[in-house]
Length: 138
Image (cartoon, rainbow, N blue to C red; front, side, top):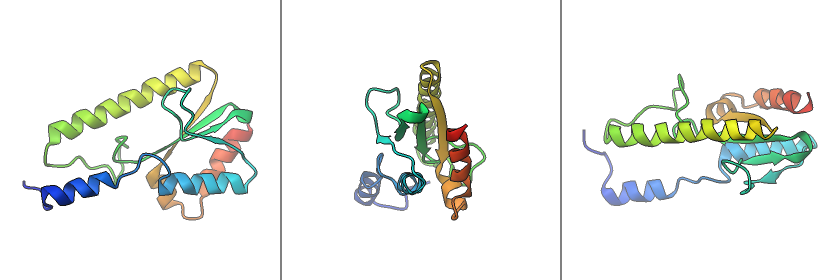
């Protein structure tokens, strides 16, 4: 199956995909800040450079895109039919790296919370993030 976009259009589309300050990440940040939580962003000294670090709670939050991090049983994660081997390998490496980083952080005493893009989208009133707050305060 051929790509529906030209090589130039596909290249442009891929160049617009951000790794930081994504819409789901900004929603989580705004909600936490509004509820009195203070955090640091993308701390380089921690495994995986967590999206949010809450030192007071010894907690880190990763806000994962469903496609890029291979969210199982999610409608937003569908392996592309073109270059399927490449995408399978890429996403598998991402999920393995995520597991390794979570293990390293937990071993160092951090609470690790993973928020999925679909959970943010589905919960427009951000009920899901209320669960995060309960976890942080526990």
